Length: 205
Image 1: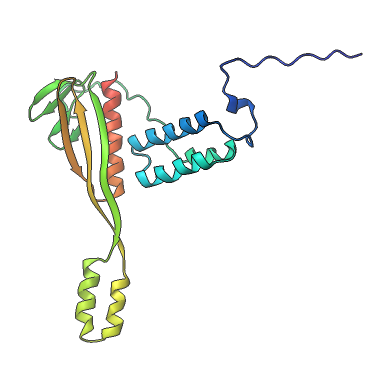
Image 2: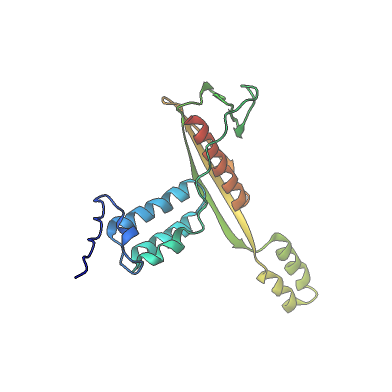
């Protein structure tokens, strides 16, 4: 009679999602971990709050682990650690309004402090709305005296309008330095969050 080799035991700390099939319903801990990743993506500027709410709701409503992959597939990986700066020590690498960041120092209107060990965060206080452009309103008013009904079609024109700021906060351990940076479109907000990420990496070296 042929002998059967027993299966190797699974380590106690192994990830259950790596051994269970994709059709298995995720646990509450797995749902919380996924939402935590989404929350980190919001803080890094890779996800806006509306999309976070949608994906978080989908994570808690998911009936199988296979549905998790689509919720994080498009999130950019964490940025690599920046190379050591070999240029002039006083050269400004990143500027947040009146706050200038060099390789080892942060200069603010209230004074300077070491970059190393400082803590940086960014927060979204902006929104994008669909509005009637001013030129369409003017065209509708002027055209009303010529072709009244046709001119009203100009009021159906819509364009995206972004208003608000991204708030950047730097903490040197004793004081909080805050600056509000205006946002004209989502790309502006994304660029600011990426700059904050870069400063976070520099401060952690």
